[in-house]
Length: 400
Ligand code: FAD
Image (cartoon, rainbow, N blue to C red; front, side, top):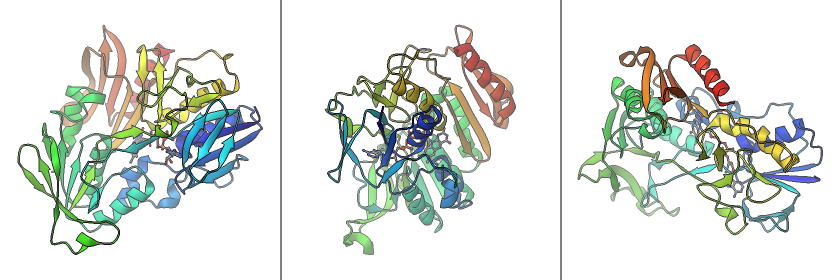
């Protein structure tokens, strides 16, 4: 292979570039991304960076002396992949020809229709989003977070510590029921009430209202006013000075339409990162890998998966057809909320029982194990890092 193009210059793209060099690839390496920044870490964006305890330089994913001998093309979007002609098309008209491609374009925050142009409304995916939100939170006031998932929970926790008056709105009866199941989702989200954050569940958001008297209403940059309330489907109106829309992310794969790379909730991949096109692999939040443990495809949006699976994807790229697909480690993620370290490994879906093996739910200090037909399939820890690590290893062994 003489040229490899990595599309997406963040955690998964950087990890793939590192893996390529580690696995002995010494050809031309092009890493391209549409953000202007060198790869940076996203988890602190809702935690320490948003709280103002670390700055932008501490987000860097590369070390100062790291040199991957790569050509970095930043601030340019890939608009298409011609997998027959083996070229990535760029928004500025250029084309990068390559023998191998790593798709690592991640995911983008979903927005709320109708929120465009309202000042005070934020999403949180990039460092630019985080800087804008951090600046607004510094002014204090009433924050309404739409979506009680992990990012919504972390923003609520950080804003609460900064002294804002916080409300979280969640459409489902229990936040986090999807990833953690209803019981444990309820226990984790009870952290909000412990800290005086209002949690309104089981109600949808109808829209946002803006302050028609605002001076910014007719600003030349398209701002039509400032948000002043979140309108709920049950008729309530929740006053807001700042709104964060935390309703999930969508995989960034539009640019692959028509490329012949199969897409279904992201890039459809085998258990080794291969796509439907030879010489094209995908990794990270944009990739919907087959998980032999559950016998289905699972797209996970977790830091550890984006980093670890790059090795397997690169092995596949460099030895197309020859390498045996291994079984990826069970998905793992963590979240920090209100001083509690939450860790989760495995798949809660499909479990038929959850038992608390250590600690008590009331103390927000638990280790819970999810089982299917008596076999452990997932574990959740709240401030139980040592015991959790033991379960994480055990689940990885059981899966291998
Ligand atoms: P991304 O980081 O999304 O990077 C993809 C890159 O590709 C981006 O730079 C994007 O702009 C670029 N791109 C997209 N389309 C194109 C295109 N057409 N052309 C060129 N470039 C393109 N995970 C955890 O496990 N624990 C946590 O506590 C945690 N906290 C998080 C907090 C926040 C605020 C966020 C946003 C995420 C958090 N995550 C957490 C998730 C974790 O950060 C992601 O799983 C990880 O960033 C995925 O890396 P990636 O490289 O696949 O995708």
